[in-house]
Amino acid sequence: MSEIRVFPFLVSELHLPEAERALLGVEWWPSYGHAVEHPGGLFLFDNGAGFGNAEIDTTFSPRVRPVEDALEEAGISLGDVTGAANCHLHFDHCGQNARLHGLPIFVQRSEWVMVHEPDYTVAEWVDVPGLTYELLDGETEVAPGLRLIPTPGHTAGHQSLVIDAPGGAIVLAGQAVQSRGEWEGAEGQGASGRSGATDPDVYAHSVDRLRSLDPARVHFAHDPSIWER
Image (cartoon, rainbow, N blue to C red):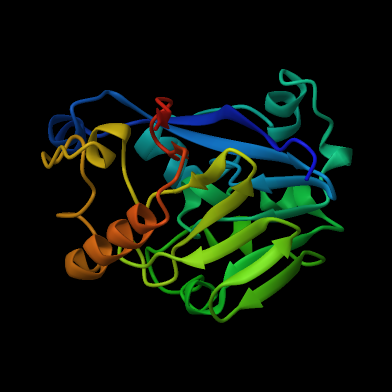
């Protein structure tokens, strides 16, 4: 297999309300996307928050970069992207889906059903006319060597991307694992997402599933640190 390369990039940051700031121990909550260069093309995993929602702007004063600008810094054109996925559909992971016209966007079906539930996401950023969503019911190979696997817990339909690379599996955990610290065993709320998960026990099971893959490297959606074996 040809070399597979992963390019993390910061897309957006949210200025947290005081209570969340105290809980998480940070003032700005970042969201990272990942571009995966593979033999069949370029796969995009997550794209941060979007633009122009009054409630989000008032609550979080977001700092957002267009995903194409963030990709350009890595020498990648949005036009090179051949497929995409969101780890889940909270607004800070899928806010720029509207920029992905013409691409298959892979989402677990159990996640898609939540889009129009109250206070779940910003539906206008997700359910956009003309977008092509591929709804999945479990583990699916979305490109040669790239598998989306269900990792519920943070949300019922959360998924992670597993890349079968020559040096060992690379895991894009999304928010199935909140931080490198959590992967290394930290349990405090600033590091671990378990206590705030929709289902903490299922969350723990998903972390165990990712660990069972014995990955060589793990990337996270809200932590720029990368864990390497």
